[in-house]
Length: 436
Image (cartoon, rainbow, N blue to C red; front, side):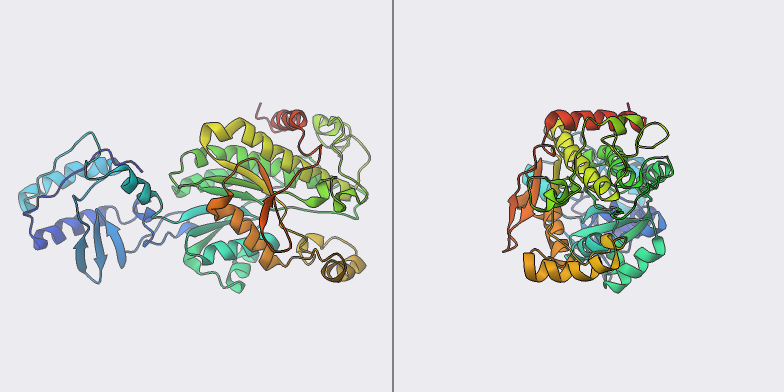
């Protein structure tokens, strides 16, 4: 954050007067979101506001710890954000001997490297959808425990998410829970509104939540009348990402990332992707028609409903949209847009709608026959790597991992990498959601 307006404290100011002045000023900003950018001040995001403590925090370059005060070398600075109270500070001059001065440029003592270093002092804020179980919860746990992130768990069931976080041993100061139902566009818009009311920056968005109805013979629909799998997995996430993109543009964090979880089942250049029914978006006539049987078809390709195919088609949309985000916004914003397949999490709750025999046999089949089994913990580590690893900042990439858990840039199928189809999916989705 650039410091453009500053006030300098007289070197002759006594410690007694310094303490008195700083305590007076700090009392006026004890709940300021700006103060909570310090890594030592804990934000309480769940309550919809920011609460700060000063047990070991920094204010105006002075550290408070057990009432002892120590100042960093160099001048003490007040940012432009506090300009509304500078007049109040100046009125204290008569009592404290402080002479306030302002300048239109950054202090010469603060060079570019120092300013860049300041960007890394605060924790990053990451929103993860579907973080109450499976891959989302495992990723939230990894990021919450590494001390560098505050995780915002965007979930449909608040109580389930709270119990899951506690069961995972996540420290309360490292996460917050916000309601989000991706099956309702109104809920998505309300989530965005609620997030902005927190007054905190957004650095990374992880679109992870998904629904899967592999045995369904009849479609179910979202609150807005769209087939559920595509409505939640694609449309809900598309609206969320489009709305929050503006917030990510304002982030001062060293790296901003938008991550959409893909699937090997949507990639027809793999063995798993060739197991019928195969993903195929066709000419998109179902998407153009509104994804419901009243106006045409609930399937993107306009065909007969198939629950397993609807999920795979939604994953193709996820991977196409990620690439279109990259083409439209990466050069302009510097945001990293990526997708990934974290491995076959055979025990995930995503399969809860499958038949019992499948749920029983699939995990050992993946563990001992295909050797493709990945635990939720390992998958969480992989997704957390895409969130935070400095080596994974390349945009437009579909990440995968080999047997040694080393990441690599994987190749998407012909359809999932079709630039023309990606643009069509984007444009039709915008129209369907009233964004165009």
